[in-house]
Image (cartoon, rainbow, N blue to C red; front, side, top):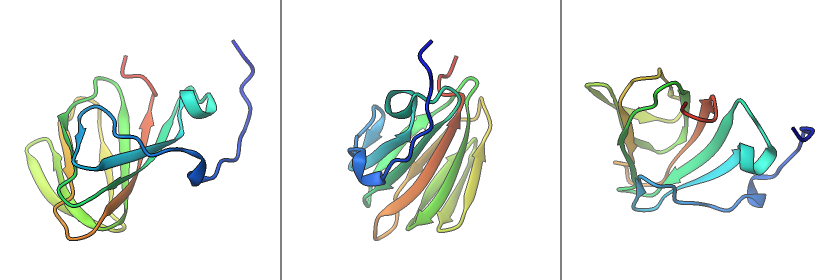
Length: 121
């Protein structure tokens, strides 16, 4: 296994990407991920969804996620519940929980997503 190194990165170094299952300008930057830093335990992204942007409802087998809303507002589905989320809300998503998020607001919805482990196996 190659030696892992600590790194400092600037957000501008990583390109915006639209990952599978994300629609209508739902973009993310993989700031800390196996492919960008060699991380093995955490995937850390910043996402910005334009109005009407969303990720489809999905579930993770073993991964835990934390969403930290930085700006804007949207609708977060967790299980059978749908709630308005906005700046400073922090959402914990346990494995096995169906979830989705969409920008239902007037401006961009920007949030951090931290996921562990990096693979859903």
